Length: 306
Length: 160
Figure 1: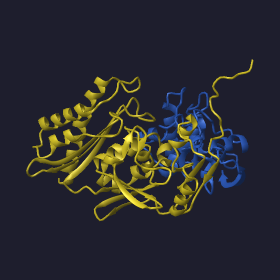
Figure 2: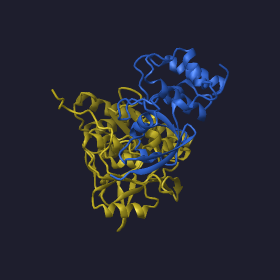
Figure 3: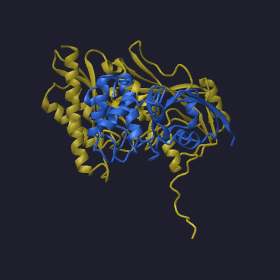
Figure 4: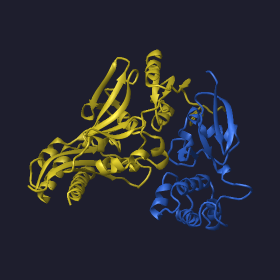
């Protein structure tokens, strides 16, 4: 009898061409020439795996990793700019990011494994649009935007307006390329923190990931403003505005922090999942993680002003 | 499907190959270059047994389209031995009994090597982090950590 069941995999991947342009305009021209049949690949740690399951159909891959000038991490006039080829390892090891945006450093250093962090990019993690993406959640809390270029020009999309569903964004991947991630450099009265809840410490998707950025006036003893992001608790990475509102303008106290944490849990709509636990457990843990992250960020503000 | 030429070095030797654009590095190493020390496990970047060192960084060869190898320097387990002598990480693995079934061993040794090349005196936590992307179902990891730690104290080309 001939075996006709599922074939576990084919070693040869489905793409028919693998192109490595040397400039951004060459890459954009290739996307245009192949009229929707080409996809951008950078690190490839998501795309290569998705291709095997057949969820990504691309005849042509356009690899942008040999284009010079896209791997910067710089502070430019109070804006932090991260090029689209910056890997998670580069973020985790960047002293600028550690000092200015600790939450992003924490998120990047816990993503996947060393092998994945060495090649996977932050821009790719955003574009892959998973609601619990380890660097997207901190970047949402940091108020980040992405720059997207096409042959027609460029546009800036705030992360709050980018995601349209699980795995989908408003980027047109048949003609646009994400070139940069930017966010305002936090000042001396601001700090951030990210926390992750997962079954193991490595190579596991998070049960929850939470990031908080707070601005505080320590002399007056109040939170000036805050941004709180949580995932995966909805179809898209979630900003918890209600919880932010509880902190903004309120006195720094355990009671206020607990109320904000409860508001974040209330805004979360996690599913019961065999891998991630029950809805009730996960909602309760959102409150715990938000409370801890706010306190951790606050301690960092105090450290900067100590 | 047009074949294309890819050139890179493996264990210090230049390689020039005609490849299909859909080939992955792990299969090229194993099946075309005969370097079967690199294992193919999950093929999804989860198990880490396909790890090799590319331009100094540990990478999963199963997630690496072959064209990404163009112009790079790749080190596999077969390249660690020099002049008939094992690398000190390999020697410590033997001494500490850090090998059981052996399937993860090439990747674990390379993870240790990649770590020590950058950080000759890592903490235990740094060693744990360095091997955190590789699954071992036999050893419980403790002897692997001890072996890398021992190699770190003696330097990567230390005495046996």
